[in-house]
Amino acid sequence: MGISFKEVSHLYPTSKRKVYTVALDHINLNINGTDEFVALVGKTGSGKSTLMEHMNALLLPSDGTVDIFGNIITPKKNKNPKLKNVRKKVGFVFQFPEYQLFEETVLKDIMFAGKNFGMSEEEAKQNALETARVLKIDDKLLTKSPFNLSGGQMRKVAIAGILAYNPDVILLDEPTRGLDPKTAEEIMELFSEIHKTTHKTIILISHDMDLVYKYANRVVVLNQSKIVFDGNKVDLFSSELYKENHLTKPEVLQMIDFLNESMGYTLSYQIYDEKELLEQVVKLHE
Ligand SMILES: Nc1ncnc2c1ncn2[C@@H]1O[C@H](COP(=O)(O)OP(=O)(O)OP(=O)(O)O)[C@@H](O)[C@H]1O
Ligand SMILES: [Mg+2]
Image 1 (tube, rainbow, N blue to C red):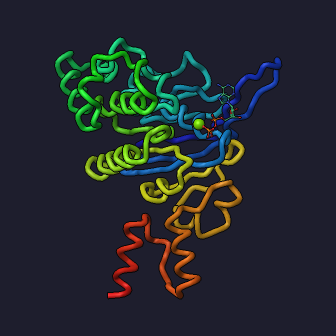
Image 2: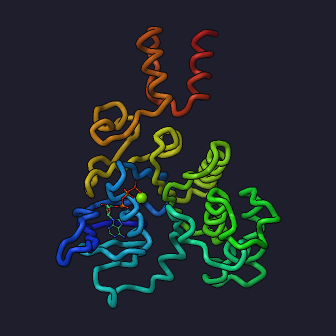
C-alpha cells in the first residue's frame, strides 16, 4: 500500500472564463508506502508541486483518482474520505514555508500537527523540543513569532513541524531552497538518515541534480504536465533524456566524464558524490 495515481489530470482556472491551465495530464504513478526515495524533477512550471499536492489531497484531481493508503480521492469533494487520516500518514513540507506557519510562536507551530493528530500537550511539546534540537533550531527562537525569522530559519521550523509528528511518508518540495550550503547538506543528511533507519518513503522535489543524484533511488521526470521518465538515475543521466528535459548533469558525473576522457579512466556512473569519487580515484593509484 502507498500512493497510486490513475489517469489523473489537474486543471487550474485562468483569468479568462472557461480557459484552463493543464498542470497534470493523465498521470499514472505508483509509489510504495515504505522504503522509497523518489525525486520529482523537471523544469519550472512542469507540474511537480501540483503532482505533490495530490499526494496528500491538498488538491483534488480534475479527473482520475488518487489512492493514498486506501483512501480513494476523486474529483467529487463530498465523496472523499476524511482527509485527516491522509494528512496523518503523509506529511508535506511546502515549497514556501510561510504558507505552512501560522502559530504565535515557533514552538507552538512545531507542536501543532502532533496535537491535531491526537498527542497530549506534553507529548507534542517533548517531540517538538527533541525535533528542534535535532534540526539545531536555537532555543531562543522557540518563543519568537515564526514570521520574524529569516527564510532559512522559517524553512527549518516548517520541516520540524512535519518531522515532529512522525508521518509514514514525507513530501519535500524544494526543502533546501534558501538554506546556506552547510545547513542544506545537514538537512539532506538528516532525511537520508531517517530514510535509512525507519525505511520511510521520502519524495523530494529539487532543481539540484547533485542532491537528486546523491540521495534518490528513483527519479520521476515531468515535462509539460506529463511523466516522461520514471526509473533509475544512472539510466537517466547516461542517456540524452536529461538534456531534453532541461536538467543539468550532476557535478560528480561531469567529473567522471572528464577523468574518463582525459585520463583514460573507466569509472562507472555508480558513484554518487564527490567524496566517493575521490576515494575511488585514490584506490586506483594504490
Ligand atoms: N494556484 C495556481 N493557479 C493557477 N495556475 C497555477 C497554480 N499553481 C500552478 N499553476 C500553473 O500550473 C503549472 C504547473 O505549476 P507547478 O507549480 O506545479 O510547477 P512546478 O514544476 O512545481 O514549478 P517550479 O519548479 O517553478 O516550482 C504552471 O503552468 C503554473 O503556472
Ligand atoms: Mg514547484
